[in-house]
Length: 298
Image (tube, rainbow, N blue to C red; front, side):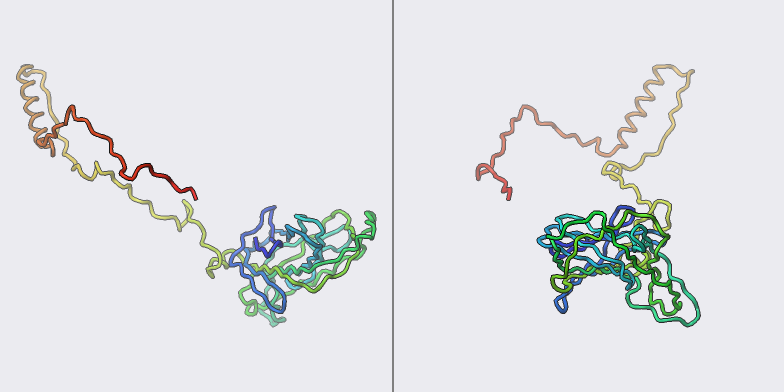
């Protein structure tokens, strides 16, 4: 999760934050910008979450998706998670954020804006009028307008395959306008999420390659089983069949089999080498000449 000091932000799908790649932090003109790449999945709705884990003072976050202003949230309490899951079109309706494939054409159209494929959250400190009483029944009456969906030229898309579509209208809880306030300085922090399809991120080395699967073409070749030392040292002996006849004299048969067994024993390596065991030999325990040994736990 991209962070700066006590602030953090993430893009969430189905309740889980997306992976972030190549997180970088830069500073220019008094504004700190945290930039990263995230995978986009066509047809998936997403939310933008952010929080301040210390919250020494209130802050206001304003969200821009593909360059479109999508509203704001004020954080007044520690660990309070601000969430934006769409653009409000009225106090009780919302159109959710959804990754979607670009509408492309071969005809000449407008140039691809530089902020398509980007989610940006801008933060600044906010002075809340604490003396102003809260009015739970006061709702904001204005909604935001939805931009017209654009069509882009195939050659001008500049490697961008997805954009954010505003989905079908859904009913939501009334939007409280909250207590009034004013800016406490300019924007000081930007979180910038650049999104592309996962396979595009992998092709450019931004995201790690896919893990091999058992059925996929990228599955590793089966490894040869490593033989243990016993298997490596002992050569296989060809199998020989010993036939036993019921008509032969038992004593003669026993002598013949014993002779055969002795002959087979002679073929086995190492049988002629006998190791004499030492008996009744006491071994003295070995002691360290330096005394007890201690392990430094630090």
